[in-house]
Length: 229
Length: 229
DNA sequence: ATTACTTAGTGTAAAAAATACACGTTATAT
DNA sequence: ATATAACGTGTATTTTTTACACTAAGTAAT
Image 1 (spheres, rainbow over the protein chains, first blue to last red):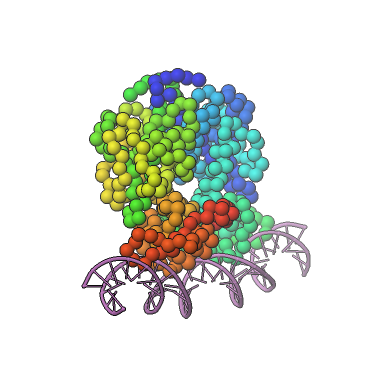
Image 2: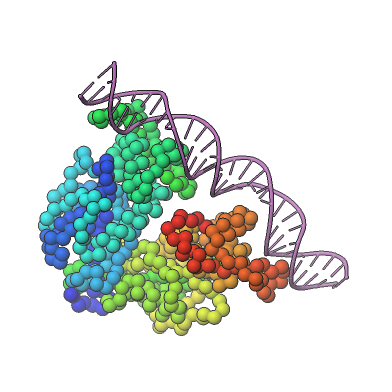
């Protein structure tokens, strides 16, 4: 516990809920802590905000340090400020989420020493988490459940080229319910933000599906219109 | 500027966007500052979070100190963390909004010395605001614009007994557009969360409208259902 | 009491969106 | 050739949304 100038005795941290999709399951990135408190526990990746960076910049830096990824759409969703949420002092944590494309060309960067390892974990079978991270994560899940209805978050989880069935899987996992295939396709195509490619899926052991791309340009033209994916 | 233990050199403040409705206009509560920085400027009411209170508790305390009101639904909506948002040091501000019933029985409490006065100001004609408060306010407006579609925020602005026309006015002011009277009434009544009273409006110079009450019990039963006011 | 005024209160038809629902097609693997 | 497993498609029904205009009722002034 630290005692300082009145009013300037808080620390501010960032915690990131990084969502990933491996084709089957919704995952989040966890680290195994190598330091007290909560040594050996699983936790959300996060770190303290430096004095000379904004909270948003800090989130970008931390994401980069942990994953090597930059230029990722990352959104703040809540500030957690209970008195005893951190055993070593008064730490307010600002939570962000991001949707990451898993697999392929972007292996996770080696972590700083505060973590033994980082691992993608199925959201449906999480270990016990350090601090109030389960709470932070729950709130993050709630947020994306709401936001995926209005924002094209699903495509950020998917590879550049994807099938409609994959898009549907992402929606089903995040919303936690099955959707009707024909109705889903009708709706998602009605926004005209997906471009059908000539190309088909490869390396699958049955009939290959048509690939699509998210057309960011067309999406941006919709700005301001209320759409519901 | 203060220099302290590494990591524990931030202050955290609360800023409140308090919405009010006077029957005609959407208002927010501003204070005129009596202290530097920004002495004599208009600002959102706010204050520093104490070390021994949670951020939510702090918001409740500050609202109470400024208005005398307790037990108000208040919702955090964003944390503002730019480096230079406060000229005297690194202050992260967590913003909350609340909807207040104006007029009648609840005069504003005398303010602490940091403000010369507090005043309800029409959202459509605001003075220049201190710090990044215009930005905080804009984001607050955006939030309630989205949230009023799913949450019964409008009734918190209105007196206990209100007319449907008043409800419609609140929606029109917040959404910034005119709504069709018949369709609005059809829709708002379709949720069955308003109770029609025997009573009529009093003291109006033309035909008196029927009064309604918001039925919180029935609303709570809808929990989880996706409703769109 | 008549009249003028202002807001309250109401219904329907058309269009759009959401839902429920099942089977033939196609690429792969054996 | 055949079996397999996921792909891809259409229609009818219901629900929701939208557009649209007049009569009713209470007040105030003469």
